[in-house]
Image: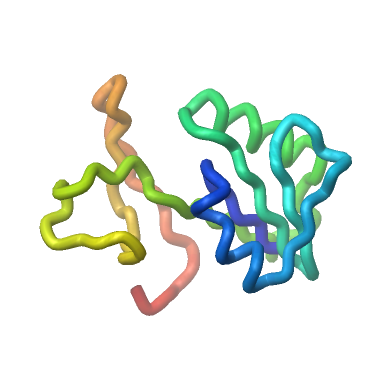
Length: 116
């Protein structure tokens, strides 16, 4: 199972259409879309909303194998002009994340090879 996590519907809209995902109306606390071996969770903005939604989702839909993949995608707090000539739709691999409220920096592990 591949689970995509986004904060906002506009970030997920094209993926929902391309993968023909259907909204699960049974989930009322957050938006959940599902297809063949794919789920998409829309958390809302902010750390607390993201953390609680993801925790609830995986409590209700636990990973079933070591082959499951979780992909977080979105704008990642992009500030226009902060990346030079970046435009809407450009893809970036975030190797360093800095939390704006505390200034703490995190370096995510990359467990899968890709051509980025």
